[in-house]
Length: 227
Image: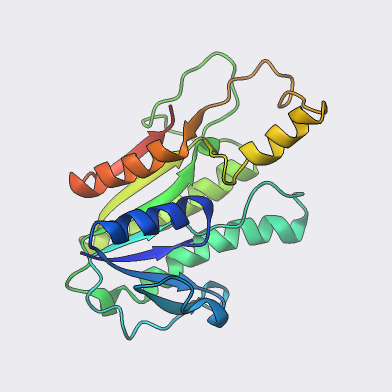
């Protein structure tokens, strides 16, 4: 299969790209930096600028699957500019891919989109399943709702849409675990919030396994991607 990956330099994307290459897939990846077009051996780098809805699509006519993992980290101060970047990096990325979808046809059959459990309201009692009808009344709820709405638009193009709502991804190579571990080792560790709330999480290897599963079995729909 020819797979187009966004967010290839991120924690999940980097490991996933290497695994997919080992399995013999043809890989292309989007990058906003022209200096990174040849960053990964045996992969085709494709320049894009989601802020301007631009994508160099000429080499992507044979793409079968898109995996959209791109998104600015939420582990930063939520200033107005940073919040705009967090939202736009996810939503405008999908808008750009949808804009150029006609150049992928007729091969494009599935898109896998990284969302988050931030879609659910904060609650210390309820267990949230994918069928929960409303989004959290906060910034993360707004971002995930906008992202998932854009993803669902691909259904009208006869493309399977798989939305994965990630919990906190744990890995010794990056993500939230590294600064948390460092703080604890320095004796500066503290609980999230009050320390009484639930925190859904998932190991990086399980994330990769779930992505493999939804690709292999052609799974569409929304899935909580947590342990």
